[in-house]
Length: 297
Length: 320
Image (cartoon, rainbow over all chains, first blue to last red; front, side, top):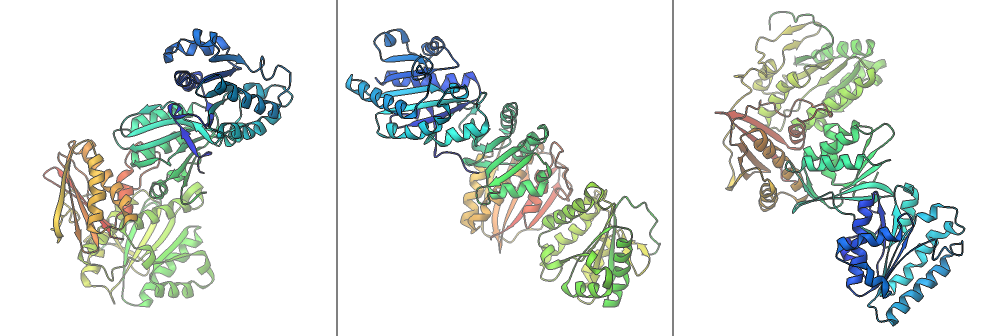
């Protein structure tokens, strides 16, 4: 299985033209990405609009001082607006994709006309799980709105809380977005990055770089964090440069500790290492599945 | 061979050489072996020459279809992989109590082996005694005196605790226990005839340089690109052992010898690895000890020698 979308974007690299899906598993991950995204836009002179849902607007504004931004003056002069979905585009009681796309296009034009360098918007999408007429058309909106951001002077981060949305829903919405926001790494040094992510809507860990005897324990600890999350989990080896046997064993033994019915999927593993899995007998562990890039199962 | 082999419980390993000089002698021992096994509900595998497979099929007649056959030329390619293949077969056939015990006819290939390969396949035969010690398996290894050099036949008496005949089994007086500290199996590494200069690297706990050195040097020595990850993985595993259990450091020597890259990893400090390191099948769930099993499986040949406390592991990997 390959990644869901073309690009994993670091939040600091999200810029005009991007329509990014953020799937996240806890409040800290959400706050990390959003406080950077909002503060970066404000510093660049963009107009920033935020539609809260699970958080209150005050909570969102409360993220900004830690990111080096005092929100008060920005709100007063209209560069920053933090409202709720219910008080804005859902105020009519119905969600209409075409109206929403038209409103955003006007917001972009108005922002540029007012002298801002661009426009950025982010929304918490949890409302879509409530009984809102038109909520079933959210994917249609996410697809149609790509045109607004493709025009170049605006960007968006759409937030899907994995504690609220199911794996299939997450996967479906993720596919509507050209790129995905990268979450804060669980671990990072010059040789190895371990980054939480989502694959097919399931909790995942991207292993980037090299795993050897100096980092076995680090990988094992990150896998424990991953296993604490519900459902099947994925370990994405697309950006792995090297892993030794102890690293592979950490994967196998983590899978072996999972409750019955759950699986750990190692995807895009180098063919040699998939062979090592078989010859050591790790393939006898029923909760472990291994796919190679060359030999998708 | 003098005394009849002792009667022993069926749970453990029985490993017998069968020295034969005619088709009749081969069949006199192997046909009852297969028939009895099948009658007891045991799984039976025959890995032998194409000719012998033909003979067996005809002689076994009505029960021939219940025996699994494999051509020895395909089966005996690299000692580590061959031992792994037997281990997997035994595992699968005994899994979940499908068969309580298995029987194997395993006729190694000696033709076309050079001196080093012959020595390593002989050690492989000896390692079977430790690798399958706890296996409910009866293995008979045929040796054809019509085609084999006398030295290979003589070694069959040292590698097999017992010798099979048509009917009874006899204890081999020349058997050399692989686990004996001063056994004939623990022998110094031979000098290598390298082409060109040795490439040498000393290493400590950081193996980053080891991996890039192996990749760069092996490519320069003519290793095909798709084999590079195998050599890098194998050397990294052995070097990791040197770092973790062999004094924290070591030295790596790479050179080309004919159709192979030969890599020596020498641990700096005390280490007491047995010559059959990596031949003992690990439980996938054990906390450690899988690396050398994988390395032995992936390399053409693997030699382990401990001298004055320092261990040298020599890996032979074919160029393509």
